[in-house]
Image 1: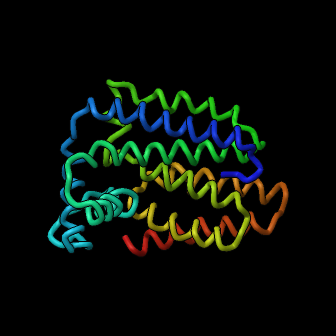
Image 2: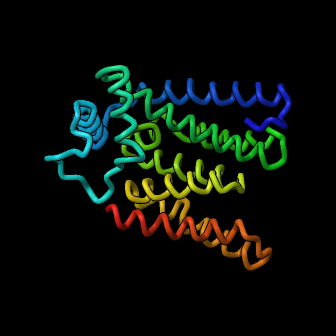
Length: 220
């Protein structure tokens, strides 16, 4: 968290994120598992058993490999095979999305009151829609990668830019939606910033985004 935040603000963020996880988990447990999610989990089990490149599988045009499937495989490798992660693991990912969004808001003005705007995102996974927001294989990993890259890019540091390049390349290969959730809008916004302020770090960020698109195309 932002070191400039007060202890009270950090406590507020912690409670908010914990509440988000508990609330979303209570909704997810009421939902069934879709065929797409079940298929992804079987892929993750096969990867955890040693087939990391998924030989013998025919993947769709949206493989979700690095944004979701790989992490479920690592989780299975650590804790073993259980059905329960199909419910709580996507909720954990969604909670991290809320956490990073909270940090972006708090970092902007060192205040946490704006985090209340995220209540809509927390309440969005209603019992009816939880299967579309708190499940595997529905682009939440892409949103997590997008917000993480925004957070790292704001650090204005070469090391963080390398991390953005790495994450963006893998995310764009795994989920083409990443082009619309981060790459394209951030490229436009950064281009405008370069035109208005002519800052070197903005030019470097443009190059990083373009290079990540090229790398994603090469490895796809």
